[in-house]
Image 1 (cartoon, helix red, strand yellow):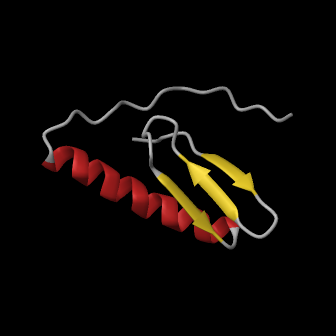
Image 2 (cartoon, one colour):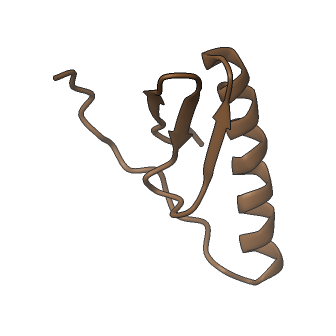
Image 3 (cartoon, one colour):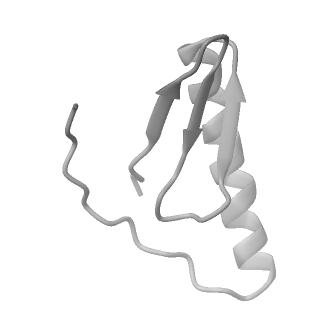
Length: 67
């Protein structure tokens, strides 16, 4: 499955979250680092859902826009 990521650049770091997985977030010093960390966070998140007998949410399509 492929989930949409929202990546934000802050003054000293990058943050990302997965809209389809509430609370699944990561922060890193570089964009490359935050991408590695969010992949790990998604794996842990989905494993926890499975262990708890919860349904894994299907990825939703989001329109990517820049403001």
